[in-house]
Image 1: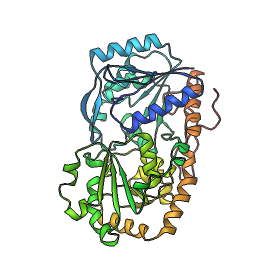
Image 2: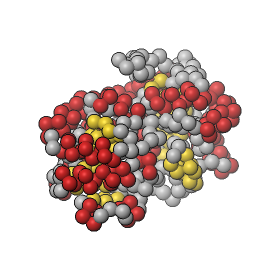
Image 3: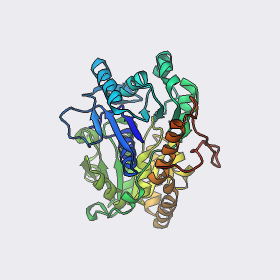
Length: 392
């Protein structure tokens, strides 16, 4: 099958959507499909052989963050050329409601099209206002995928129609087989994310750190991610700052080793999350997880059975939970065991087969403009994947 995938966000800027598209493309290529990904990127950037640059991106405020997107006449020209040259059996666009390559591809597309929605934002006035210009694109979409029930809800409330829920995928074995890094072990707490982006929640974790250190003065916080370290730590007392180690950007291999090394991984995000891929990566690495009780995080953590939850933006509750867990190695081991069992449903062997099943349904001409493939429900009533295996 010839598959074209459109990435809305700059390929050179790490993010959950980019990682999902990268891993999906490589999974599909591994199964013998021909895949081309169109993404914003510097024309001189070193890209994987399956990625085609659509030119540089610009920063645009989007969903409580700043996204780097490509949009305009030059981008539209490159989209049309890529579609013409690709001859795709399936076009898969991500976030087609954003002012991006995905929107441009949706306007230009003429063949079978699948769309994945990642955004969870129940108060999106922009999406409501954009509904009239999005309608021609949505009428072309043969099947819609949402990465979580909360992304599906955003789609339904603002744009109508429906979607099948297929979560983001992770190569579970990559994280499970990583080796701990000795310099990152020994009563360590981990955080990975853009450190100057408020919704990632690092200020909440830093506010909780003094209480954690009162109970565990030998604990350390390891922070990996892009951002201004001095600005992030400027309000910390010297004795607290001494227990924080900023690692900067880390490679995939370093991230896996970090997650395998820490005693506790904390995700203090404050909102705007539709899934929580870092939680799945942490569970895959057998890390005990403590996360804010966002709806999407609670779903990923199996309602708190595969990781503990604390109230959003409550630094005191975060500190109390972290102290209790660091005091209780038995509970930490229980969380690791539950996570290892739960995380298998997010492995690419499952997720990739489900996405291929959607492709095949659309390619066979039986897709629809609402949910597309048949879905089933889990014990909580959440919409899950199409039943049935995919074929190569």
